[in-house]
Amino acid sequence: MDFNDTPEEAAFRKEVRAWLEQNTEPKNPDEATDESSDSVTEDDVKVAKAWQKKKADAGWACMRWPKEFGGRGATSIQQVIWNQEEGKRKTPSDIFGITHGMCGPTVMTHGTDEQRKQWIPGMLTGENVWCQLFSEPAAGSDLAGLRMTAVRDGDDWVVNGQKIWTTGAQIADWGILVVRSDPNVPKHKGLTYFVINMHAPGVEVRPIHQINGGRAFNEVFFTDVRIPDAHRLDDVGNGWRVALTTLMNERASIGGGGGGAAMKDLIELAKRIEIDGRRAIDDSAVKERLADFMVRARGLRYTGLRSLTALSHGKTPGPEASMGKLVGAVLGQDMAEFGVELQGMAGGAYDPTSSEDGGAWQARFLGFPGLRIAGGTDEVLRNIIAERVLGLPPEIRVDKTVPFKDIPTGA
Ligand SMILES: Cc1cc2nc3c(=O)[nH]c(=O)nc-3n(C[C@H](O)[C@H](O)[C@H](O)COP(=O)(O)OP(=O)(O)OC[C@H]3O[C@@H](n4cnc5c(N)ncnc54)[C@H](O)[C@@H]3O)c2cc1C
Image (tube, rainbow, N blue to C red):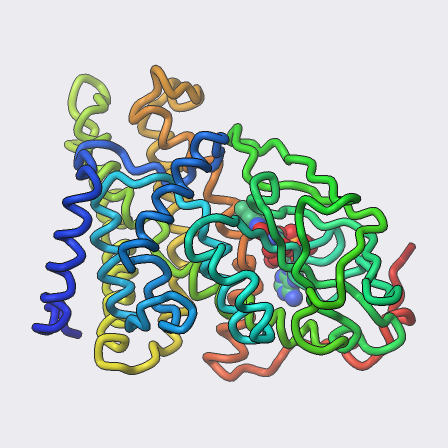
């Protein structure tokens, strides 16, 4: 493992820092990090779009994208350096995670030249926000079991059905959509992938009110929505192949991190809180818990650095990369629970004006369970690690070769 920048990386970091120093304010190091804030106002959207445009004009947007699509053709390690440095500055909420992390790479990989020209520039400059319309009430982990339909009608397709848990649909201009175009073939084969205009007639977005007070995701209903065939990505029936491109990019963009950033905040909290007239941090049981979190957070950090070293040496990170989300989300949730517990009776109240750290612990406590589900649940990630990393026998999948319409539904 090598923690130091190479001379080229150090020069690049210097360039990044210089631009960020000119265009942003530093973050207050004493401010608690809020990893689960997830309500954006119209003003937040405007500010985030303006920041994206500014980065695009200066050549810092979507750095890893090829130059032909407006990116910089940067290496993965350069992107990491940018993220590290941008993370130290005050910047608007990131509303483009799905747009740039998943939708852009999918359109680049599977779109025609015309489709790329139509959609990629608006993503890069922040003109358009995109969302991912995959999950349905009865299709999440088993995504290929989705039921929303698409029927061809002249030059259009007519789609009907419902999606759910669609992050950012309430602010999105465009969406990536997988639907069932043929129920007569096995489930993975009858899917087709489209780009849909979220402002089209028949699209209805209903926000879901989350336990943490946020409204970041939605139910989306489609009634006789017409999509031009020109907005289909790849061939009819090839939707699963396209969806896999999106999902692979999703796991890479969710990545690790988890509660690591909150370790410093938790130690500070334990110094401020008093138990029986003395600082919580002086209590041996508290110290033991903090030490346990520290060991896990460090393990996660060094595993992440190992992946970075591989990237820096031009290699593809190994299986350690797939563990980041699984371990990080569980650690984040455990630390949030302890942050709430340390506050005693007051921990039960979630009030940004009077709770410790502006309610960040309660927000994390309510937000982390969602991170353990989004982008693959803990159980599904464990299955992936078991099958693809450890080479254990695969799960039995009895419905893989049966025509979709013949799979019993219990209805
Ligand atoms: C914060 C958040 C944001 C999201 N954003 C989006 C979005 O933008 N777009 C979108 O399309 N979706 C989104 N989702 C949905 C997400 O992808 C699904 O919730 C997830 O894939 C799980 O599907 P499910 O909710 O249907 O649960 P299910 O698949 O029904 O799972 C229920 C339980 O069964 C377990 N389980 C399922 N299959 C197996 C198995 N084979 N082996 C062992 N255990 C299993 C699961 O681990 C889970 O505990 C989001 C979810 C969250 C929480």
